[in-house]
Length: 231
Image (tube, rainbow, N blue to C red):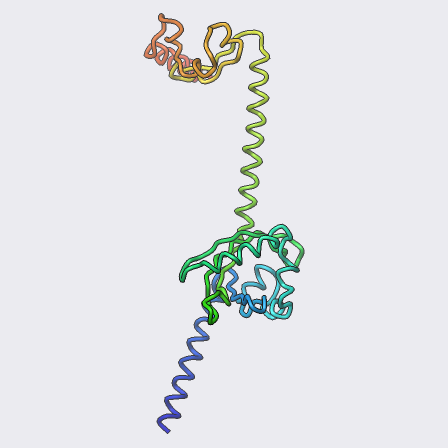
């Protein structure tokens, strides 16, 4: 009777532990999975897959080895073999991060960041299963794309501005509030006998001894005050 009671207590403790782990994994705001290299299937996926990808854990396991080829972007799918190869030299506790695209059940492409480590090794010490998390980073990727587009637009505008400056017949100088040259055109360089790189390191006083930095700063401040009064 004592042994039966201990077995019941052990079973109850294991069930409580499994329930706790399940609650933690289901509450985690990313997909948690265990992937088996031998069968090429996810043997475990938490319920977040339903929210993030639109596929229930049961649907993912039903698709089996066809799951990744069915929903991963072809450009990322071809890199999987190289990613898997990295696990053969991965030390215990080391993590591999990968970014890739997967198609949501509604047809929308989503970007993911996965962090994976070796969960189980075979008798030869080679990885058999990996434990990983997949975080939806689509919003971050979209923000990066917008930023890159903005940078490209600014660079294009700068090139157009540079072209207009260099086509001007007169010398053009842009001076900051401290009296230093920050931009000049080719005509200005030709007229003064300096290269572009030389001119943008000089101040107004380097070309006209009647000017000095303190005088320029004072006059600039006075002009700003007058402009403020006018408004």
